[in-house]
Image (tube, rainbow, N blue to C red; front, side):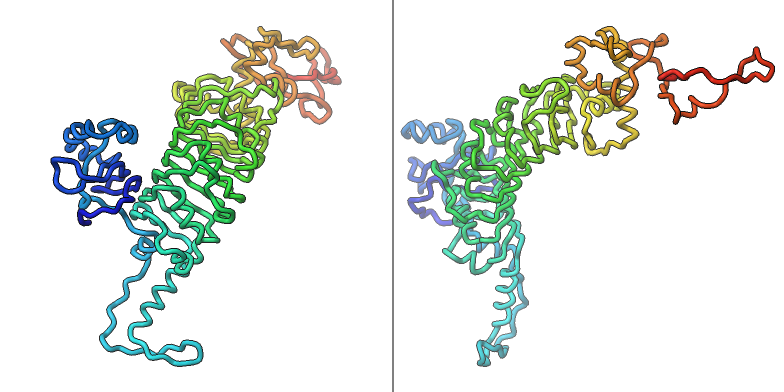
Length: 488
């Protein structure tokens, strides 16, 4: 690029030596010759090299320029011929997807039919082939292709009318309006990835009616978007099903109303400012089935509308929950998850509670026992035999504690205190409904001894047959009435 710049470069995204930045100033900065570009976010090596000159020169500029920088000395002065301002969408897509045809022989002629008339052409077959290739494209990836905007009006719709999926991550788009100008020409667009573009969003509803009428998947990772801007953008997506918002420092500030009502998957990973109270603002999205909350610093959760043994009205459709890399250190967290109506898949790797335990298998068993409807834990299916073993071991481990708290085999005397019930909400149902109540311990420490209890009755082989009595000659007598429970 030469040293001549237009007046509208301020605010545009640029690329310098593989790093992206935003133009904050354009003009002459004495004593340097030529018009330099003031940018924000250039490569750290460039910042270190030019920081001294930048710091000294910034003293001569007004404070509003300083306020535009993320750091007072974080910018660099760069000559225009070192800057890449990018290319339009259609140029980028042609560069990546148009086939390079073999050179035509000079003077080679072809006959093609246009309408009902034969026309003699030279090299026309390569043009037709290229255009037909672009028109058939349905999925394209233009990641890191320096796309800066739509290009000629209507050009995208004419060249690529069938596009359904576009990856525009890490490009030079500077505003949501530029995104709209591209997508407004693609009426069949279903998937759009805009990650790692520093976009400026308008203060009012930014999407014309119909722009995203078919969009089902929207990826906005690492673009600096706020929750308010998310709701504004999503308002133009009537059939949106999957929304990815990873690493945006989002604070959920308001409850979505008339927006995000069709979303089935929401990814809020690595937004460290989110807490449990903010999650309640999205707890009533009617179709939300998958929620990804990895690495948000979450340590506790409580559903105040549901007591012990009850189900919460929050997250009514939630089936799949990811809580990896958080700060979960209390078993009460998993007790609360049992209140979710539809939850059957959970991932909770790399949390203090799961990492600090010496016995990973025991930790897994206790999580399974505490969440009754769980079918998959940390990507491993829970078989019926594993659940039965986990619940029996859990019941045995806390059997003595249950009895000390007031638990008893006799239902009329079974009155465990509130503290035990709060710590082990499912224990009562495991003892009195799913399995038999624990019997007397035989010298075990902290739990029950390993025994097997069998219900006896007409259908039990242990409740039938004759008993041997040494006092009789034949040694056989009729069996006495069997007990309700036979412990081996």
